[in-house]
Image 1: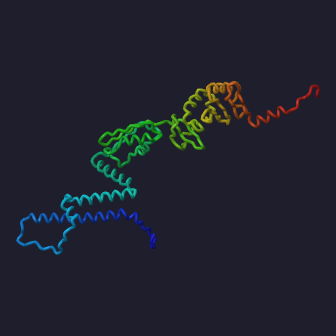
Image 2 (image 1 turned 30 degrees about the vertical axis):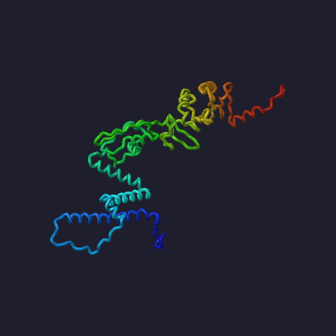
Image 3 (image 1 turned 90 degrees about the vertical axis):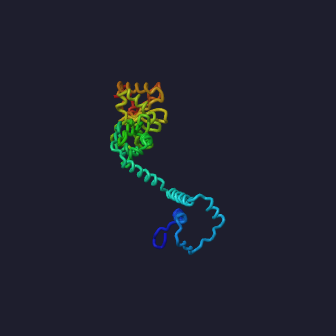
Length: 337
């Protein structure tokens, strides 16, 4: 920063500008020399006038041997071509060093699109088929189709790849109908369940793909699965759970434990610990116990079905205390009044 409070440029940042200035000056000198040579040849080839040519005020000294050899053997205008190449190289170096490649690419694309639009290839009609969750503006934004794009220079394959990279879109096709119609067909994934891991919720599809990293109110009615690996195994387990509507109706969440087996958390807080194998048999037994013994309405906090030959039930604190007090009551002896 100088004394006036202005930021001074580093010597390194001035190098591209100095190179461009030197190249431009060299181009001007060579161009003037070339024009002078052409004029001299034209005058010599014309009819000699009666008046002799004036003697130059300053006579040119004989050039060195190297310069003379270059003037004799190097093709005419090679210096101008070399200067133009130097200018282009300096400009390219400045663009790369300055980080303006994206800006230059955008400017070139906008220019050619403007020319194509003026020639009659403006996109005047857009048709999008198959969208359910995404709006038309969202689909166009995902595909990178802007209001400045022309149909002539629109890369349909690139638009399709960008669309398929979005988790909501399973497949897409892009058709260019000249002179100005664009047709996009997409196949959307459907929201299947909510997946919770490390305290974060996400909307997932049937194949486990994360569709959104946040939860909108419209997805709050989806089934909830919890735990690492639950997103990829949810489809199979939830389909099995749906075969037992009595259990499914009171289930709040399915928890994947150790990436091996499932637990159920019911709406009243009851935990159901299912076995790793033969889950269908355990669910059938659970349904029968609720039908015959009203298991889900009992004062219990957990039911363990992991062992095939026995059922373990954990009482609530109140129920356990009441049971303990019941066994602590002294028994009356026979004959006591």
